[in-house]
Length: 326
Image (tube, rainbow, N blue to C red; front, side, top):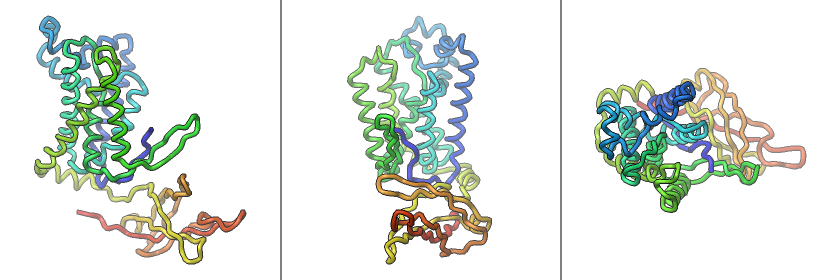
């Protein structure tokens, strides 16, 4: 299952989440540039349990190197698909968690989830000389937090059936639950010392995300966090909107609602709308003219219910202007 997007738009621009993704990508490019010495680089900056549990190995590293590795391992990745998968999940779920926690608390939360995943890996691989790298543990924590914050959200998911992609909206609780079950079964059925994936780190990160969310929500936001919230507040509604039109009395015309902000109403905008058609969704581009008023109707001709082989009804979208908050 590949998540495409979730149904909860963030109210603020996720500056920390975007920065984390950018840093991960930049570090991966540095890895590619140092490919001839990549193994040595990963041993130095990855998380190697034996560096902390075997005195003879620990003696080769200074205290600064040991501490720095506890952070740097979260930004290293073992290959193209490794980083793409991790960053995509972080992009899908991270913005909503940052929205709830605020930028500074989210950064601390993310790093602590990563450290908790590393500690879990250390417990199950006490004397391992094999480095573990990747943001998976921290992202697992983000998914745990998302599960608590938005269990009823829906995730548009692509399920490849042979070579045909099938798109379906899945409840977030079900999607993340299946993901966690897969991690747990993989950890339970594999040899912690032999596997190339730190499954227990994922589980540790996930559980720590749930626990840390509860703790962080009790910590009040400071003035800087409130200031950043105001600065990064989005002034636009989501570009992609899912419309669930209802039938009218003439049977073929359907009605729905499109949301825009006062700024978008004044200047005009373009939105991509997704309209369910049976088990699939079809997307259309809608142009909202400048100066449109609350309650105005946009007519989308020929995309309503099918009348006959050559004709279809219309979709009428009522404009709802959402005022800025805060």
